[in-house]
Image (cartoon, rainbow, N blue to C red; front, side, top):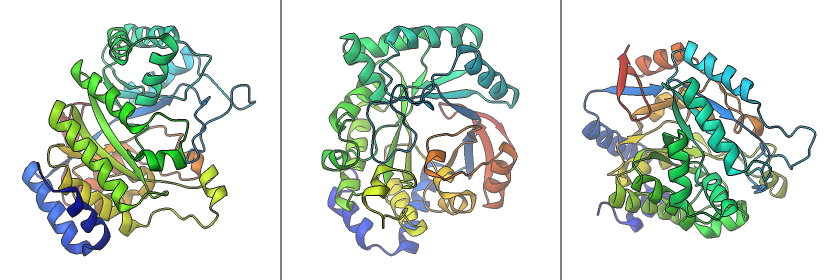
Length: 347
């Protein structure tokens, strides 16, 4: 069963950070004794920024009809994939908003067109809120919807839209978004169809230690049942330009110490999730290096393009070469991986 939830809460509230880091690092070593830190070369393609969920923590969404609302054209998407492949990329992360003007047919045709033209690229796409929305609008079950998307070319699913898997928190920060049980149902059905997924957690908004522990417990429990999560990615809420920040003007981003604490507890608690990612996107390169001694074994994506966190005013850019140098400087052997964590090459 692993660590009890109440112990996780105690660690989040009271544990001394150096000891917590040492314990998380020893868990990482036990799971990954080869001293390798992996990364994937990919690109975020946000096919639309129109979203009816209007989450209070998000600065990316636009209402339908706004002058700066967009849907990417097919050729523009292809151009982004061409650039990804030119840089040795193996995956695209295809995500957008809940756009009422894009029916399921649009997504089926988009996936099919990408796969036909780029059979080698892994399409890591559509977070659980998007998939749930497609299902509801098409009067289909989650399983039917996922089967259709998989048939069209979907290879794996990102863990977006999880935020904190506590409905108390969701009511405060994203009242229109799917509830935690629905997010877990999408992932359960995806795993049942052989689709691997990641799990994420956005912390540092209005949640308490108890909510973080509930989130970790939900992920570990589903992983026990399905084994379908390849990685866990905790990242800190960036309040800039968001409705939450406007409501609470004194709201500050999570500190580096808070980030490392949550990361370490995640590694210790999630004993059945093989990989934990460092989040340079929200923390920057130096803190991501430190994260490699607090339980993380993966540097995530080189992310040639990132729009959602950037909308909140946080813009860290990291090239493939910088990723390799940062991992090596932290005392690890860098390795490029694919979506399923198979090593492509060592550096």
